[in-house]
Image (cartoon, rainbow, N blue to C red; front, side, top):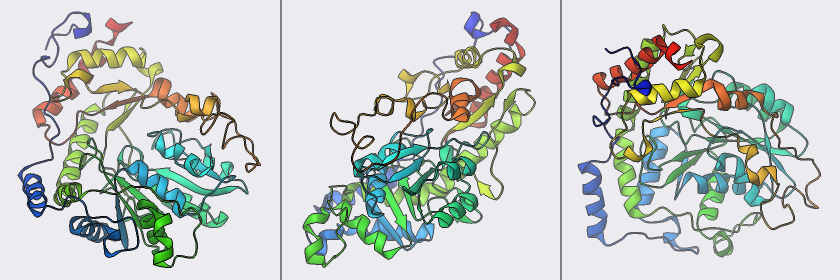
Length: 437
C-alpha cells in the first residue's frame, strides 16, 4: 500500500468509484406486504372519535401486538414518528407549564425540545465521558422541586445506566421516558432498551435499524399511560367524552397516526431486526478489534451487562497522543475511502463529533420558543431560572469539539473486505500522521 496519504495526493485505500454498499433492509417481503394492503383498499382506518376504529386498522393493531410481544411489554402504540412519540409521552405524564424535564444535550433535538410543547422547561445534564448517555451524577444535581421527568437517550445504540437513573427517579418520584430511537434490540441486564423506563420510544425513520420511512412505536406497561398515549395520538379532545375519560389534563390530541401501509412494512421489518442488529454488532466488534493497537484512538466501550447495537460507531480520539487535530485526522481518513451507495452526495460517512450541544441552538440561546415573549422559559408559570450557555456541560462540549469521531461504515451489507478498507484507512493515516502536521 502506498504510504503517501490521499489527502496529499497519494493513492487512496479505496477508489472513490468503488462505493460502499447501501443499507437496504427493504426486500420482497415488504413489497408483498404493501401489495396486500393495496389490494385490501384500506390504507388507513382511524376515526377521530370514540368508535371501534379509534384504534386504527388491522395492520396497525397487528403491528402493535407483535411489537409488544417481541419486546415483552404490555402495550405498544404506533405513531407517525418518534418525534410525535416523545411529545405524546410528555403529555401522557401530565407535564404542564412551570414543570421541568431533565434532558440530554447530545441527541436529535426533539429529545430535548419535547417538553416545550406542553410549556415545560428543559434542564440539561451532562453525559458520561465513555458511554455518552446521561450521567446519573449530573442528573441528580439537576433535580429541583419542579422536576417531573427525565428523558434519557440510548445514544448510538447503548442503553442508559438504568439502575442508577431509575433509582434517582424513584427517590424523587419522577418519571423516566426512554428515547430508544437508536437502540432497538439493545439490552440491559436482559431487558430490551425502550422497556427500561416508564415509557419507551422507538423510531422507524429511514436511517434507523429498521424502518417504514417514518414511524414509531411507544411502549409502556402502564394501562393508564397507554390509554393517554392513544388519546393524544388521535384527537383526544373529541374522544374523552364518549370514552368516559375523566382526567382530561393534556387531552388535546393530534393526528400522530401510522398508516396501514407503514404498519404492514413494519411487521416485516420487525422480523429482520435480530439479524440486522447482530450484523451491526459483529461489524463494529471487528473494527474495534482492529483499531485496538492505535494509541490515542479508543473504540467504544460497552456498559457492563449491556448489549450495544451501534446506530453508528463512536470512537474517542486523543489529540495529545495522536499528535494531530481530530479534524485533520478525519479529513485524511475520509480522503482514503469512498462514499456509500445512495448517499454519494454526503461523501465518506465519517465526521468529527456528532451534533452541536443542543443548548447552544438559537431556541435556547435566545430563549424564544412559542410567541415572542419567551414562553415557556419566561412566564408566570415558571418559577425557576434558565441558563443555557457554553461551558454548562463540559463533557459533551469536549466530545463535540475534539474527542469524538463517528462513522456509519459498519452497517449490514458491509463485507469483511469493506471493513478491512475502513480499518486500513485508519491505520494508514495513523502511521503517516506526520504528513498532517
